[in-house]
Length: 478
Ligand code: 6PG
Figure 1 (cartoon, rainbow, N blue to C red):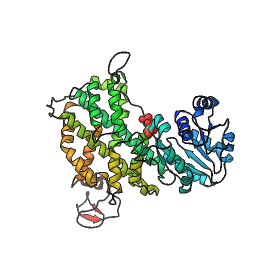
Figure 2 (cartoon, rainbow, N blue to C red):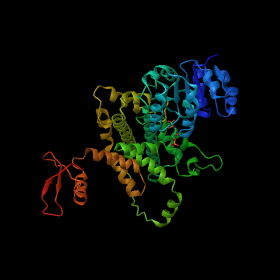
Figure 3 (cartoon, helix red, strand yellow):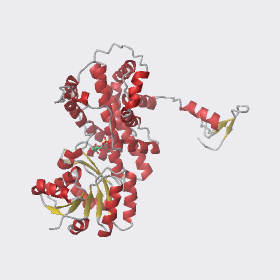
Figure 4 (tube, helix red, strand yellow):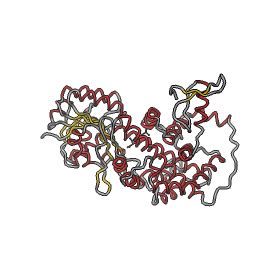
């Protein structure tokens, strides 16, 4: 029996994608570096579809119909290069290697270019949805040559989640475009989780609402514009009691958040692109700060708070909901804006409506909001920033009074809300007629002759600060 696709790397994500493919009628060859995982998969789930067991990469390749499709589900980084190196001599022109891990997009670009020389297609695929998504239908973001998509696209679309009958999978663009979009998805995921955390902290330590009662509030919020997977599971986590102590589960969890790195990559890449993803960056820094446990312990001893008692507005819970919604919108706007910058830099034609569309189901950031975002970009008059789409300009504008009240209260109470407040600063900075950047330019010109431009005439100028303070035209070094 020849298989239509081979999967190597049968940890949970790989095994579940292999099962998903088999359950959808494909014959799937399966391989793992240590055969025990292959045995475990076939023993537990071999009856779910047609699997072909492969004990080596050679056997895997030999079992595939041509052009061959090999899905790598190995750890991002060096293991991907190592498997590619072993596979390449076994493959022919037009065969396709698919990397379904969370690889860095720059690695994907490098690998795609190197393999293209030998006529092998390399498809970097962002897969979101965790273990369950991989099995039941993830959101899939494939990048690579258009030709390779003709071969792998239909299979990926078949195993993807669906929204209104449409698969949450579409060709994103060449080389690393798919992994880039997945990386930005994760940056938004970090910000989304951080704003939920800030809301919960304010409800607990501002309004004194205990986790179990908060769970009801989040459940309630989940039936409105905030409706999303993350809000839904927040209610579940907040409601959970620790079986050992009877305490709220979150009270027995150490409050330092880890990361595998995709959020950090988003911010590093945004810095390189000059893309202001301040909310996403703050969410990455919030995790980093939470992990500095010994410094935090020292700070608790050494640093004064001088918190101010504030009378919370009567509708504080509703205010927090609105601040959460507005900050979340900003994170999406910043992430999508970064995609626009990346498309220019890397020569991709990223279609924001298509991208928002495939995030509507299957992935971690799936949310009602994404359907509205899809519509905003598909309307024909693509906004240069998500917040400028009429529906969103109106929605965020309506939330501003509550948002300001919440940030002001948080500051008084000494409750850190880095993403709520930086998102509001982003919103205000965007709207502001004059920014203090003019002063920055003046300072740079004074100490470094970095030059500046004027509002009232074309050209680049320098003031003779150390001389008679006259202005001269200068070569542009700003
Ligand atoms: C997804 C997730 C998934 C995972 C990441 C992020 O889309 O299914 O983003 O890729 O959650 O590993 O995890 P960290 O929080 O550890 O960076």
